[in-house]
Length: 334
Figure 1 (cartoon, rainbow, N blue to C red):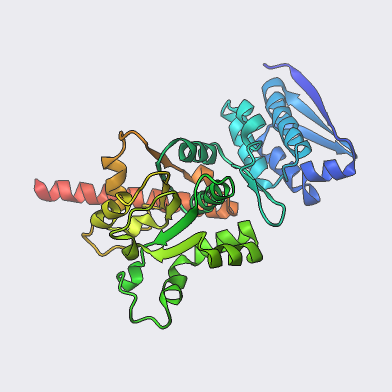
Figure 2 (cartoon, rainbow, N blue to C red):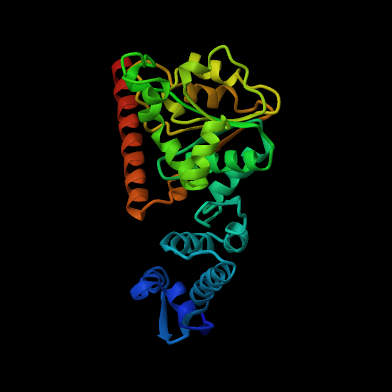
């Protein structure tokens, strides 16, 4: 039987206690549900009582979150749950440095940092490769972080422009019937990219950059025949490219450029029987030098925790359905 242990976490003031324990002690309730310990909150301190290992892990998470708060990180439910998961998984040291890598500061003064180990791996891969594939479910920050890295590269004069593109699957890449000029035609498909840019740059800077041509937004069909040099190019929703479109896009890479290709293989909208260019490229290019492939998981989802559960539930459902199809196919072959 493990020896009983007591640890105290002492806060500087009530503001710090509120930041770490949450509104209405919501973060503290998570600690109580995740650790077999007794937590006694008294003003500016929390006492943790229980068996040694559980107390040590709970105290480790609280101390690391307190450190992050003092370094300027806003503690949310994500940091609490993710921190608990890391410490329980024996990766508590990673929590100490994870949120310290500020990529840039947005127009509203928000520090953009990786929030999971998967996101940090994704950012490192972008830094060290000419082409990076970010593959994973909704909410893992694939597109937003790619745009952040593009803006940072533009600010640091590593590139001369940002090029954003996305397949317009619903219109079959035939945009002529839509009203307006090219910008009006592709706006509905590229709205998530606009939103990310406006959030990062602010409306005024975004408008100025667009007017000066520092940012170019075009449908994938308009990439054909071009060589893209000194640019940071992002292809979003790449699961909806065909194999030929993907090859066409990747071979547009010019000197001084970097590409990031993002997509979710669980949300392919191509017609039945059409191979996803993203799925094929991830297999073909897996060991090609200068190409990095990062597969983000439900654990990397930053949206509401219910979104993580939804992603996991759909993933399990798809796996079950795939297994059933394979079983049925094997039975028919017999």
